[in-house]
Length: 165
Image (tube, rainbow, N blue to C red):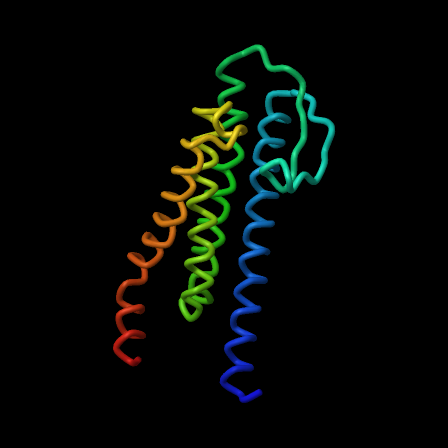
């Protein structure tokens, strides 16, 4: 196999690993966001499990919540806290991401998905867990929106790369 093909295969493999790690990190932080707010409101969490087939990488149950405001905060907290963390992560390491456009796009797709899941889980809770059409459309928009937002932020660098060929 020639060096070009080896380089392309390494790049594809590395992108797949980065995508998996970003998804794993985003999903873990999503659930940690819920747990933090459960702890703040002194609500017990239990039944932790890895549940890839149930639409989330990690899942847990919590004690019933009687206050609507508290329940809303807990529902919104997962995706929104994960998105905020990943945005902070990007800005702390943006110089590293500058040279790796595909990693930045992957990260912003995950950020878009986390924002969408935070809003959907908070506002359309039953729809979020049933994988209905609202969730599917929101996730498609989140993927496209996340990628486009990253491209917009880095439009000058991308234009230079395209000019170089």
